[in-house]
Length: 356
Ligand code: MRU
Image (cartoon, rainbow, N blue to C red; front, side, top):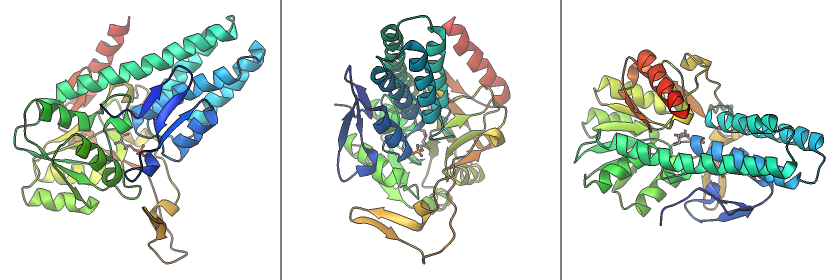
């Protein structure tokens, strides 16, 4: 059975607490939106597409708990919850995109009964989940042909089932190519400081029986220099109209090195990761996390300090990779290539046309 980061039981959101992986597969089942809010804050649920879906179900759970409130109070309480969920993680655009679509339903149904509004919110959240499952499948199919048999592929952070509502984005491109019979080897960057590569991607690759090797983040460029990497493939948290992307910090350094070594650098993301209101990467808000993340290292026996007490530390969670270093962006609607400032707006208008 495939790993699923999030499932809806009909009354509860069930999710894997990713902070406990790989040592423990801890499943949380909750009908309390505050548990979802907290899970997003502490990265128990993470990854751009999964954040959007979890946010939507957070709104559903809140709506169910406010169901007996008079309508005006129901609406204002839910608006507050939407704002609270929006403020948790600023970089992945999937979260505000999903939350604003929930707000749209709320505002468009102000004359309906609360149980009708709850029904519509629930339908929307379920469709976001199903939709992402389908988008992941399509990304895998579109991207698989870009990877050749026998290649070694470098990836960063976690872009598998744990990060999405389906089987993943960049990691699912790899998994789909392998299912098609290609032999691939995956180099996994550990992804300091929170180790999504070491803790989560290796866990998924092991379940998928895909050969892989864990490296420290700084090892990638050296392997490229040694001709041991044939392609880099990563996900994205937000894509600007010109093709600049925000992704887990460390992505930019890999893109620079890949460019220097003439190695293809692929980005895989669903259409929900494009921000049509942003022209360039520098406009993307970058989440700043606690210096504590950098000053400590999490092990199965707890958190250990890795620097003298009082050391100053800086923890941007993401960085920006300029479009100039990106070979292609793999989406559920196909693969786009440079010049991105033409191909991306065209892709987005074809996506919007399909909804009319
Ligand atoms: O901080 P995280 O773990 O939420 O960051 C996740 C990433 O950077 C992923 O690469 C990105 O969200 C794409 S997930 C398909």
